[in-house]
Amino acid sequence: MRENDSSPLGHNSADPSGKVSHIAPGNGAGRNRMSGGRNRRPRDRHGRGLRGPILPFEVPRFRNRTQIFDAAVLEAYAPIQHRFADNLSQLDIAVDTIPRMRLNADVDSFPEEIVADGPVPLGRVIQAGIDSHGRPTRARIVLFRMPIEQRCRDSAERQELLAMVLAQLVAHYLNVAPEDIDPNFRPL
Image (tube, rainbow, N blue to C red; front, side, top):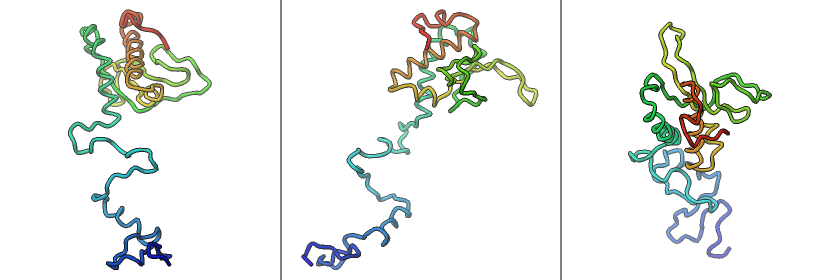
């Protein structure tokens, strides 16, 4: 064997210090991962760049996808709420990950209180009513995060889609045309 060759077990037999410089898979290579991985350095795996968020989770500025989407919803709703504050004082805005309703793939049309892109609902208006415990509920607009995000390539497109969906849902709630809510409104 030459001086730089490794032994069959992955040990570098030519290391003058006698320490193991490489451990082959199957001989304990994964043990450091089980200890919590606190001392691991980020690696550029297969040339695709570093994985994970740019900011660590502990940093106050870190926001996950849900928080980013919630902020985008509030940003898109702010001009509508400012313009129709008196009429929207009894309306809540909510975000759900996916639609929680029975869907039929063959159906392309939905009632007016649901805004959809083909067979996929993007948001809906739930009118005020009484819950299962007999308590009154407020009217609310529910936006579905995953269907909206999957239709957008970037944040600008997401803002445009959110503005369109919100305009249509608020228009239904107020019983006016979507163009009255947003003069730049254009349907899907």
